[in-house]
Image (cartoon, rainbow, N blue to C red; front, side):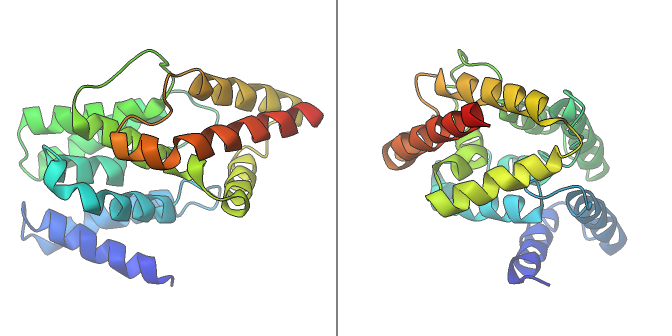
Length: 216
């Protein structure tokens, strides 16, 4: 088992222990999360992705308005992931709401988590969030786009593997549409730190991928 798996269990237990001491409930909810992210058809949207988002948010802990809400949103944002569906974020948000209700969390908290999950759909090029939590959630989810060349190529292969049942000409068309939507935004990233550190590299990677897809 990879080391990050045990770190994730520690992160989860620390988070959920603030709301319940029911060990069976803790285990039940964690098992559901692990089972979802470890499905064999997943190659990028896995627990490793969750771990990378959790660790990347740590330096911003004091800037986050609702820290635990953001944590729960990270855990649940891809819990439902079916490549042939367009409502994965909506279903993930609803499942998060249902499970957080079991923990006795109030409606406003649960709705906040839902909205954080929904903002990771990344399909609206015009929307700008004034709330730092939402801007950071988006940036954490998209941070992979600014990886070095080798890691970015690994990421694109993992994404393609998740869509392996889709013919190449359809996949390439849809993938280019997604990349162009991201590139059409004024900024790919929304927080100052991410724009400064990652914006240029992310744009370079996306443009290179589009060029590669054009050659296929």
